[in-house]
Image 1 (cartoon, rainbow, N blue to C red):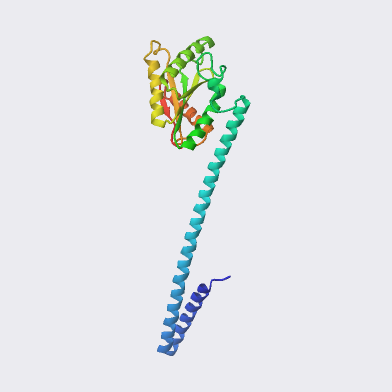
Image 2 (cartoon, helix red, strand yellow):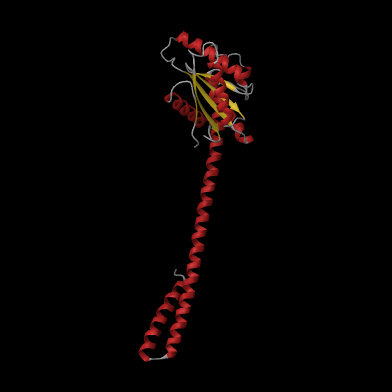
Length: 262
């Protein structure tokens, strides 16, 4: 259906043109006045039509912005639900009745390091991210790796892990959690800690080891990532810390790197 104002504008313009042509041909002032009036009408209709078009465009932009906002909210809700489902599934698989179960389980700790066993790391990160989201507080993940030990004998690696595990336990807060990860890595979860505090904590661990009697022979590299600065989900947070660790290793051993902001 055509806009009446568009029809009016076109009709007025044609009428003005016709009246103007006839007025010129007939040397009639009256027709000239008529042509002028028709032109005014056409111009007024055109202005109104332009204003309505701009209003429609503004409304369309607002509607698109609202759609994007709703999509973001839905994505955030979906992420929360997925994380909670993953956490519950992990706890069920490990035979847990309620959060915090590793503290009560005598088999939850790794013998070599005295830290939580690797199988609890994903569960603990999930719990901390969920708690941080509810309380609107940051948490950070640090992944440490012992430098230059990948070719060492397994017994030597275990001894090195024992030393680093002891340093981590003595350096981090009681409210923080740390787990052994694989042969040469340790993961730490720092509650209510933004990126600056996490970098400081990682540097403290690294510096404490460096100042020990074996500091020249045993050093650490570390990658740090923080929720919500670097990631909004638990798995992505760990991945970001891992990428930061890769960056630290690529720049040489015995250093701490922070993940880039997402």
